[in-house]
Length: 433
Ligand SMILES: [Zn+2]
Image (cartoon, rainbow, N blue to C red; front, top):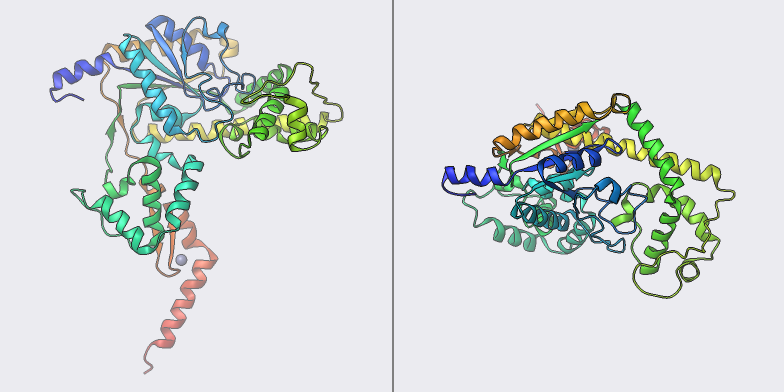
C-alpha cells in the first residue's frame, strides 16, 4: 500500500496473483503449467497434502513430466511427522514465495484443491475465518484459557480491547470471552465482531481466481479412475509406510497428514496388514529397521493383500466418496465468496475429456490477459460474521455459536420446554386477582 494513489496503482500493476482452484482431476495442474508457460509464471501449491513429503501417490503429486520445467513452490515442504503444521505456517511460506516470484519479475500462480490455503495467500482475513480448522492450535489455546477464572478472562480481554478506538460492547458470557481470547491466541487477532470490521478488505495482491468446476457425476467418475490408478501405483504401500513412521515417532493419528483424504479411509486395511507384524514397536522394528526420522519401507517388504480384497474395495470407495464430499464443500466455499463479491472466473471442465482442453484453456488465457492489462485491487468480501457470532438464549442461559445453530436451538424441544416452564413460573408468581 502506498499513500500516493498513482504509485499505488503502479505497485499493484507489478504484483498480480493468479489463483487456480478446483476439485480432484479437474485439470488444475495442466492448466496452471500452461498459463505459467504463456505468462512467465511459477506455481505455488495450495494443496494441503501435496505439501507433505513421502505422499507422492496419495496426493497425486505433480510429476516432473507434468511440471515440464515450471517451478512448483512448497511441494514436499512438510514432513509427515510434523503434526503441528497449520494454515498459519502455510500462509507465511506461501506469501514469502509470492514475494520472491514477484521480485524475479514473474507471475505467481497459486494452484490447488484446498480453498482456504489458497485464500490465506491473498486474503488477510482467511486465516481468521478458517482458524477453526487449525484443531491443534485451538485445542492448546482452549486448554490454556479454560483454566482461568472469570476475573482473569475479563482482565485479559480488557487489556486487548482497551486500546481500540471504537471499543466493543461489553461481553457478559464467560464462553464468549474465552472464545475471543482463543481466537486471539491462535490468529493474533481479535474476532472481527470486536473490531467491528464488517466491511470488505483489500487483498494483499490484485488477484484473479479461476475456478474449474465439473458436474457431480463426472467428478465421481474421475475420482474413481484416479483412486484406481493410485492403487495400482502403490497407494496402500505408501499408506502403510506413513502409518508405521507416524506410530514410530508417536505422532497423534488425528492430526497433520493423518487427516488427509486417502490416509484416513485406508486405515482399516493398513491396520489388518500391520496386525500381521505384531503390535506397536514390533511392527515398526520389523518394517523400518534401525534409524531415526522418516524411514522408507524396505523394498523387500511385501504388502500382503490376500483376504483383503473386499475390505480394500470398501476403503477405496470411501476415498472416492470423501473426495466427492470434499469437492462439494470447497465449491460451496468458493460460491459463498463469489456471491459476496469476490471476482471468480468459472470454467466448466465436465466435457473436457471429449472436447479437449483447447476451449477451457482459451477462456483462462483470455481472462488472465485481460486481468494483467490492468490489475486492480481485489476486495475480499466481509466474512459472514453471523456464522460465527455468539448468540445468547436468556431463557436457557446458554451461548450458541452461529446464527444457524441458534435458530436450531430456538426450534429445539429443549428450548420450547424451557419457554413453557418459564411461562408457568411467571403465571405462578403473578399476583392473583
Ligand atoms: Zn433456549
